[in-house]
Image (cartoon, rainbow, N blue to C red):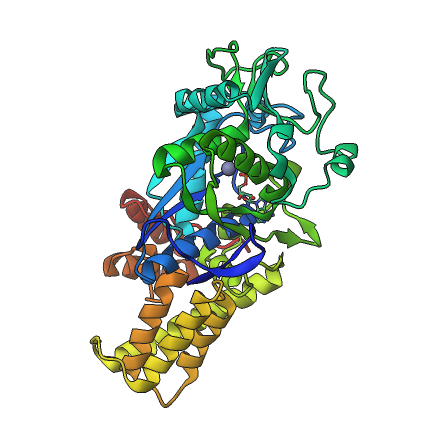
Length: 456
Ligand code: AMP
Ligand code: ZN
């Protein structure tokens, strides 16, 4: 399987450190607000990557962190801790904020059929691991204490600018870093904050450098190595992480471990709306609940995401989403028609079906070309020369790595009785029999099925 590698800027074969196993780390959400559909585009693609690796026979360990402390307003060292800001905004404790938005993140991810990672690790539960890693960096003289904070000394890592082709002088003139007297070089970054961010911080821990909290970047390095060891096959994130977060992760990890840390870097391009990037801190962003409230199946957003390659910008519009919803429901109809006619499946593929399979595998194996893979789904749906049995088998095989469940109703995990109840309720609503509609809704609620009606 081949994948673009941000480190080498080329498409390269994946060659795991341990044959057959892939150790994969993904930067998780910062849980100070709902994830928006831009964030989720990145997680959909990471999910497609993991599913595809598994379909290619790799034994994948997928680790994802939860950033519940230490991510400042800028991705670098300026501004307040996002958790502290959210706590003020919502008049809650940062702990409550963190747990609430973490739960909401997984609920939304579930609605998009994103599988849960094998390991989910919260920064606040790994403070000792983080402090240990900072201590190693201080002992090895890659980091220094100043003004109560601990900083990574970028001058000790000559390759610092290579990963992102950084022009540090130019960047320091811009908004990347706020002037900090304690730093030897303004490009240095904080590993542990004690003094400068201390006064309002609720989430804080004791450390050899004073009471404080960790920087965001060191959290990922410490947790990734705890669960995956000191060498990782694939590290994932959104494209915005290249310049600061991943550059800093590489610097501190390679200095602490003394060798190359990650073989393959996978970055997903942005989702934009009205030509601007969607951003959590800007407000007014679209979440999965926004889509549900508008009566759109969240899986239509997954389908829409798959129709744009992960290294291209996805320019979101409701028109495109509606077209995706229609396309998905037509595909489901094709599946339904074929499966009713086929009457069953076996593992035998005709030669024509094998050719489709090959083309699908080639598309996904060549830098996760999901738009081509979706086009193969459609080619199968429209090919009258294929038997219904072939079609069903191909749909089943293709929908695995794409994470599209084309089986009618199954994607919601409903029983046939529940489906019948929903239909009966629709009929009651059409007849304006609100009492009956409410009765059925209550019945379904009691069974854990939440109904949301389309807004007019
Ligand atoms: P955050 O919760 O802000 O730490 O971001 C979670 C993930 O979403 C990270 O991998 C980001 O790089 C990614 N991300 C942030 N904004 C966007 C966007 N507009 N489109 C795609 N990915 C994004
Ligand atoms: Zn990270």
